[in-house]
Length: 305
Ligand code: SF4
Ligand code: SF4
Ligand code: SF4
Image (cartoon, rainbow, N blue to C red):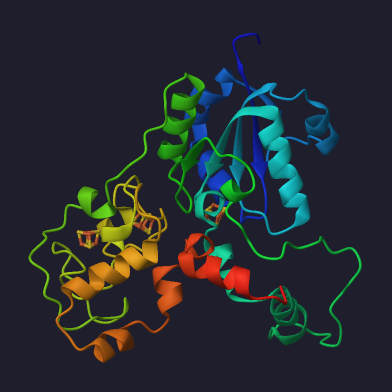
């Protein structure tokens, strides 16, 4: 046990998909598990929180954290991980950039509660917003690294099983985790031509040529503004990249980068271009809204939050 690395795997508010991706390693997990002395992993073992709370400060080698801070309990768990672990790893795009749940920053807390408990089509009793036994929700969703220091990031929604295994092995054997300045386009093998797009298409319109760059064909592919690492798996499946890895290192705002890219290659009137983006925030900031410049401005300005 002495040589094993003490680790925790934590879920904050999340869909647990990143852990599912980890479990998808199946028998390859056997390469990783023997290296670990797992101290907390509620997705797999019935650990109690006080076990984690009682661990000495800095006694863990690494904490792998999935999810984001939507509740005050999440904030407590994230701070615990930081206090106990020498290295904190953001596992997945929610943990790195805020992910899809970060789109909640478009609304105030009362708007969200109203939607959830009064307005959603599936709600039966529409009179009340429960006030008892609800977790305290945070005013807005911050990036995890706005709350604690994060040592390494492994974005992806979810990261592939291989990426998780390689990152874990690398970290646990003392090698630094490499950050990519490459984009999905760099690992996409489709034929790229000079882009001079006359028309954008929705994903379901027409049938894209399986060999040519999707953006060349007018499909809104986020590859140019998205971090490499997944092996361009969506374009390989004839589907535009949706941007789930977030921006490459060095790019602070994925949506802003892509607005510039699309504007530079579209040969059309701005009005026509705008019409092609039916849901601009959902398309350009689906995974990174909580990290975006506009979210920061809005989070600071909505006093009612
Ligand atoms: S990054 Fe994606 S898969 Fe992972 S928890 Fe968030 S939503 Fe789920
Ligand atoms: S299909 Fe998408 S990812 Fe591939 S080269 Fe074109 S824009 Fe880049
Ligand atoms: S191609 Fe884009 S959307 Fe698909 S997995 Fe890779 S980064 Fe995510």
